[in-house]
Length: 118
Image (tube, rainbow, N blue to C red; front, top):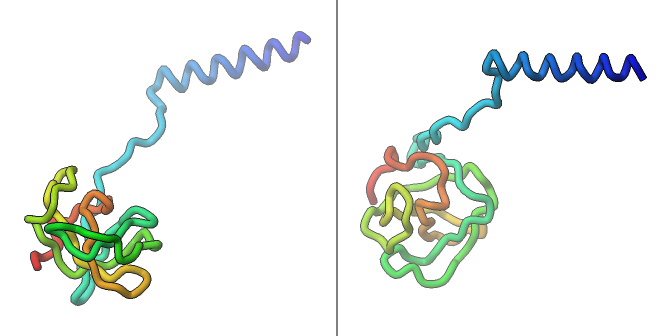
């Protein structure tokens, strides 16, 4: 029993020492910007994000994006309200089912400012 107590005390001391020197979990970094590659911009997005048939009055979902690093053609900044840092921004893309449409900016985790306007 004595050895267990010593090991427990040693583990507690090591934990306290690490806390004292400021060792902590890594923090989240800022979102990466979308990257241009030829005529397309590649951005990180939410798995299963909806792609709509429009942006001013979005209407029905025409497809979904099941990849989380997808390409986009251009952006519009005067669409329906979506919130986030770009509250009226939508991006033109082709859903994984091959249908063209628009994705909400809030479904994209990359900074979309580099994407050219439509």
